[in-house]
Length: 176
Ligand SMILES: CC(C)(COP(=O)(O)OP(=O)(O)OC[C@H]1O[C@@H](n2cnc3c(N)ncnc32)[C@H](O)[C@@H]1OP(=O)(O)O)[C@@H](O)C(=O)NCCC(=O)NCCS
Image (cartoon, rainbow, N blue to C red; front, side, top):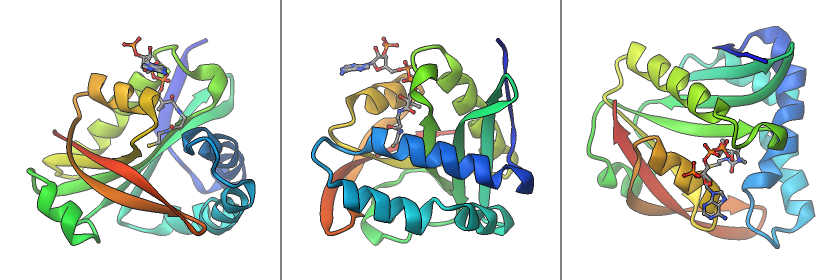
């Protein structure tokens, strides 16, 4: 079944939050406390949070829809990174953060991730970005491999907080 990639709409927020809650755990390293995961989802991935992301002019959310259902999404955040060390490691300006890339597990390994990535990079280019960067947990081998296949290279490191746990991320970047 062919997938459609399109910009997210206000009517999508409940389904987007469901997909986000189901997929966030897939990116967490083994051993991440379930309570920390639940708290992160409640704080950052609720329907209300997605509704506010959608009205934020600095953000762009794309959804992958297959058979009428949202099966994955990406979120871009335009502008300079908030962390000086990340900003210092980037080579291309203007830059945009690829803040989220998530597909439901049933859709991994099927080529849909590349289709979603390409549409998202097109959206970044259309807004004038010359480079795109992301943070990925350094144990998330599948995602790192996918980003390498998508043209990203490791250019630095940062940390990522889930509850009181601090995790180590690679910073990856590519030109557009
Ligand atoms: C990240 C994501 C969108 C990538 O989509 P995908 O469909 O899994 O990507 P692909 O299958 O095209 O690429 C994954 C690659 O990793 C490889 N891979 C998978 N597990 C691996 C492992 N344990 N060790 C080494 N390589 C591995 C796959 O073989 C594939 O490489 P190949 O095409 O050269 O064979 C998807 O896996 C996902 O949503 N993951 C959960 C959420 C997540 O981690 N998001 C990223 C947060 S930063």
